[in-house]
Image (tube, rainbow, N blue to C red; front, side, top):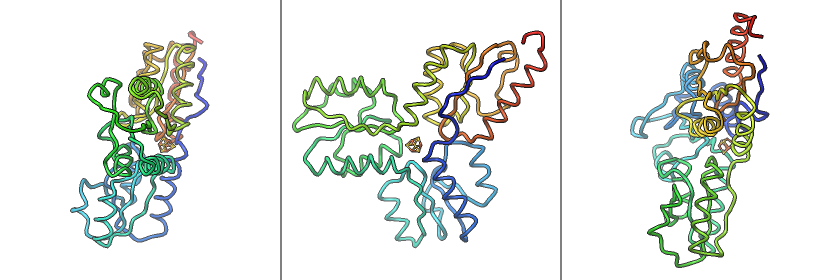
Length: 285
Ligand code: SF4
């Protein structure tokens, strides 16, 4: 059995950075520590933080003192303001690429452009970009969303960092029909783009594909969709417990990639487990 890995795998730099900030914080400061959303979309990583005393709550009302940790996706301006009013210490792990997209939106808004954001309407990152434009930007999830949009000034398209290039191309093509001079400001995350490109190729070469990551992670689900389009034997697994031995054991070439919030140790566990299937089926090697 041959296992081929995507070159870009494990935590992305934004998640590595966020996890390190929180680990250092726990070591060096006094809590209580609070999160309004998971620091990473990975239940196993979150379980470790929970053991170390980090609490996940749904509203600021549940917090009266301590440290509020902002996740890598960023937060609404309103949350920063209210947290300060409550006297909470804020530790911000927002990914610099997410902040970069917000700053670009702000800049082009001040230059008089109509901003369009390609992304999922309810995603924190999209809300953050929207707020950077004083909610004057328009969120577009699919190209067809342009049907009722009127163009009255120069336009730019900015995207949620983890969007698929294919969706962005379709959206931009539609915008160009309405405004020939429309600009695209590329705020796509290079890590996500690399992984999407790589899995497209690897899925064609492999008998089976494993996308390791959380089912609640948008970029993991996107990788899985891309893999499955190219190879029907593609599986999204959160860890060793999701492995289907009978589906895997007889395969000759297995491709593995991961979401950006999947730690190396989960990937290692998956690989070790797969290798034991090989030992159980020596005649198939
Ligand atoms: S996926 Fe990209 S944008 Fe998101 S946290 Fe990681 S590096 Fe930053």
